Amino acid sequence: VFEYDSRQGRGWQQIVKWVNHHIDRDHILKSVEDVDHYLNDNDLNVVGLFAEVSNNSAFSHSARHFEDVMFAEARGPEISQKIAQHLERHATLLCETVYVGKSRNNTKANTLPREGMHCSNTPRNPQRPEWTDRFVADVHGTTVTVRRSDSSDGWEQNLQLKCCDDEAKMSSNEKHHITVPSIVMFMPHDERFAIFNGDVHDTHALDKWISARRTPMVMRLSEETAEKILGAGPEKAPALFLISRDPQEQVERELREAAKQLRGRVLICVSGLA
Image (tube, rainbow, N blue to C red; front, side, top):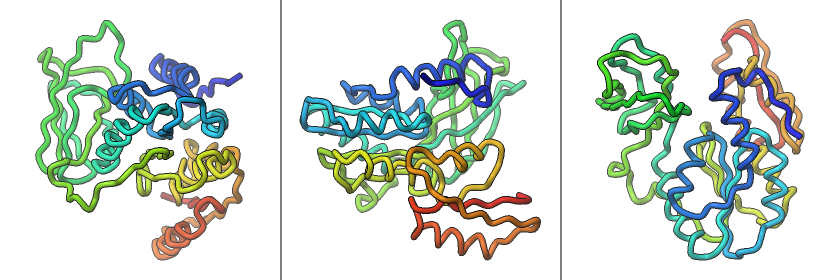
């Protein structure tokens, strides 16, 4: 039984996403196209690639220990290898969700995280069947200009777009190599992609590895992050807080270096004035 947390939002988009998450929390990937659906719908994704057709019990058990992480797996050598190659490309590109929001005008410009990115024309936020909105995203430098193409009007939806690094500009030594069997994780923070180097049949080790990466190494305490900090998943970890009324840039830099060594053992949090 899972209880819906109203702090996630009361809109139909949030409810649909929550229901789909719990229905598909241990989904079997049957095609490369299926992968994009799951990577697109959730920021925290764990993907298992197994040569055996039978179920991996450790992976299935871990899938039920995290409410905010989406799990999917491929079974069989051929499909797992195809998906591994697709994930290698996805991990190298580093895709992010860019919030565009509403617009009273037909176009709206937003700043991208960095140069050398391209953005999909397809909204990442859920779409209702009756919506006719169509968009074109044009990127110049670190600016993406979004235009509604089916109308001269603006739009009322809180538009989000998927933007990725340009594959042509990535060097060969930046590419990841994923073998089968493997378990990999995608997250919207820190290194953004990781490969599990432990025993894929060890549920405890897998839980610990996921817990260490489901949140940033250093988090700022807020209403949105409090639950993740105080309820740190199945692998409970102590929290170290830096509390200050004034900015402590030097101390924060030192904490971020310490966080790399303490990852998975301690949650490091910053609290006070932003």
